Length: 141
Image (cartoon, rainbow, N blue to C red; front, side):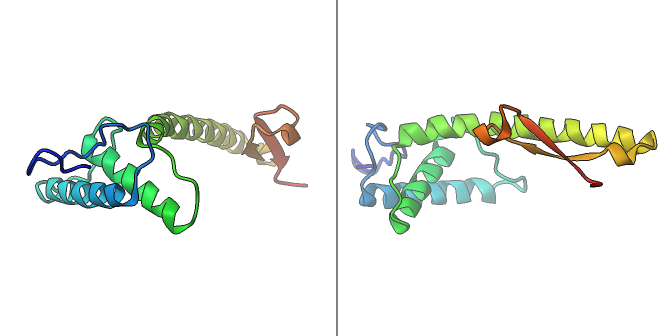
C-alpha cells in the first residue's frame, strides 16, 4: 500500500515491477494529483514533465493504469511506464527536427523560385515504404 507507516504517504510503489491493483492506482492518482495541484498553485509557470519527478511519474502511472481498466486494455507496470516516458521526449525531439529540416528545405525551394519541386513527405519505418525513412510525394501531380 502507499500509506504504510502511519501518516507518511509514499507515491511510488515499493515493487514497481508489479502491476498496480486498482486501490493502489486510485490512491496514487489522488495523492499525486493533490501534490501537483499544490505545486501548481505556488507558481504561475506551467508544470514541466520529468520522468524523475516522483509526483509527475506517479500521476502518469496511475492515470495510465486507471485508463487501461476503463477500456479493458492490458496495463503496464510503473517501471515499464517510467522507461517508456524516458524515451518519449527524445522521440518527439527527433520527429520535430526531421519536420523542421524538411520545412526548411521546402522554404529554400520556394525562395529560389522552385516551388514546383516541393514535396509532401511521410516519415515511416514500415516495410511498405521500401526501407525508406522519408517517402516524398509530389505536391503538383
